[in-house]
Image (cartoon, rainbow, N blue to C red; front, side):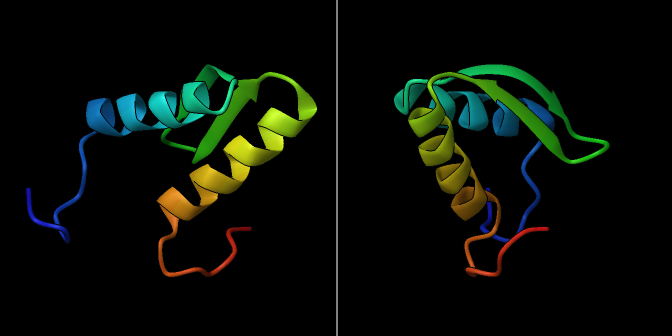
Length: 65
C-alpha cells in the first residue's frame, strides 16, 4: 500500500483498536461516517489513547477539531 493510498475501514479499525489496547483502553465504537471513536478506560489511559489516536489520524501535527 502506498503512503498516499487511503486505508480501508478494516485496517483502520484494527489499527485504532491496537493503539487503544496498547494504552490500556477498550475500543467501544468507531463511526467512520461521522469520524468518531469511543473508548473506555481509566481517565489517564483515555487521555494517552486520545493523544496517540490524534497523532495517528493527523500525522502533520494540526489539532483535530
